[in-house]
Length: 203
Image (cartoon, rainbow, N blue to C red):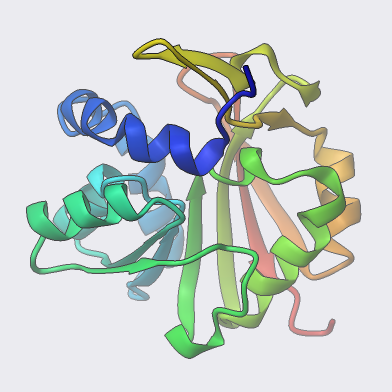
């Protein structure tokens, strides 16, 4: 039987992610560090927002977030639970210039779903919607290659949700000088990396 893909996986499991992660504040220290770096700048895009749990936390700590996700089911739940936040159903690889400009793009475990041959396009899309001196804050997998966690079973359906890990060197090569590394902070566990970048306005 052919495995279902990433969109089906997140549509089918949206309620489970919602139930678990609206209660789980694991990422709050990372978000507070993002806010500290941003200072008085507050307009951010939560890239790959799922059902809006981290977008909600961004709002609660004083940021002005917009959420974007590929799963229509996740976006529907996000809108229902957070009527004071804008949520967009779209693909992060598409031209997102219609959204305007942001002070930062925050990607928590979303770029991990982008294949290597699409990474440079992904970083270009992010670059194009950032204000000058804007930021890219990323949570990515520490391992390299396609990960076993790509493969999931839910309600007797098998899925390939395409989870990839990339080295910092490979990510930066795919950035093609669009971003300047600021720092890395300690993650919640060693399966993850927290990276902070700033837009290179000289690109």
